[in-house]
Image (cartoon, rainbow, N blue to C red; front, side, top):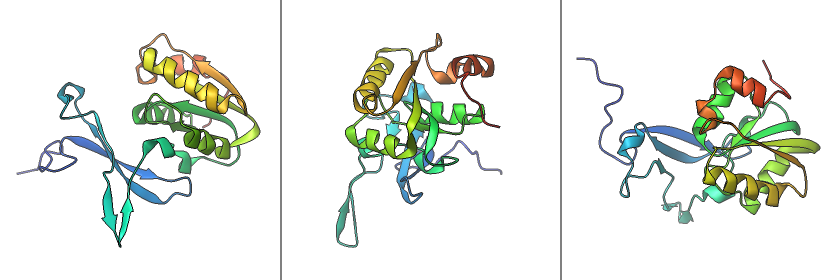
Length: 184
């Protein structure tokens, strides 16, 4: 009998895609879990799980997504001239699949001072930061936070799709919205 790849054993990441999290230097710092089926989301079963507080070698380790940008370790070159910032993992993956390699995710609708610092480390002084958010209130909040924290230091532009989120855009729509550059 072949095991069902969507049948997970009971545990923290049951029913979730497990996502490795790396710091800007590429070191593995933990794993996140995203529900495979959004309809399974409820108060006791959030869409995303992040590493919990834990003890290792006498130290308390605690993950805080406000200190981190997802995918920052995988940039093609540094410093970058163009960087796309999205809200979540799926948008980051979707843009990567469509040829946009220099993309990071905030993992939410806010941009903290620490996340802005990470973005500024990735981007040259003359860089353009492209904020490609979901087309909802959370997307607006994300764009406003990015502009407040990164805007005083770099050029920022908000890319707004008519779709509900970047992952709803076709390849042609993405190309039109991000017409400034595509890497092959």
